[in-house]
Image (tube, rainbow, N blue to C red; front, side, top):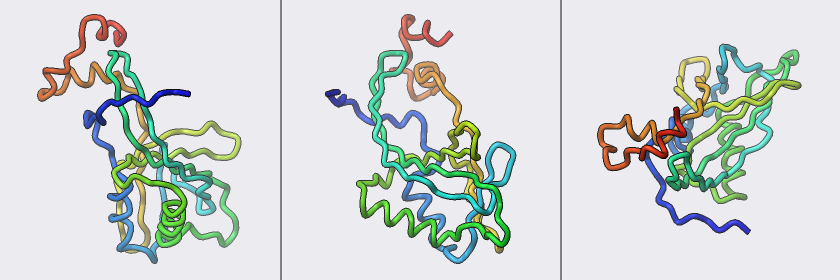
Length: 174
């Protein structure tokens, strides 16, 4: 059994959208279709939300600093378009979230992560860059989530001078 770390949650990297922020942005637009753009493409209208995960992470970065955070992971399959298939409505998407929230302990402040793949392709991990509500639809603009070295990131933050990496931890980032 793995013992949980008693480390404070860091706010070094702000989530792009939390679960509660996403819900608040979507709720006024329940009748509109929900579309996504990712990796230079628009999701096909037959997309399917295959799984929603309440994830809790405990980690130790390359500088030896412990961290804990929560994520809501939406797994989406970008299925080929079918004749007459419309995108899922915002209302249907929110009802799926509500059903999951009834069954699982979902952290409202959790970072939203979206995993997408087309059949036969590797899954990719995205953050929500923007939520754009128009007259015709609501668009989730997704951005690739890069890997980062947290000690190097902390060192570049002006308010984080007390968190500068040690020479030993900085060496793992070069």
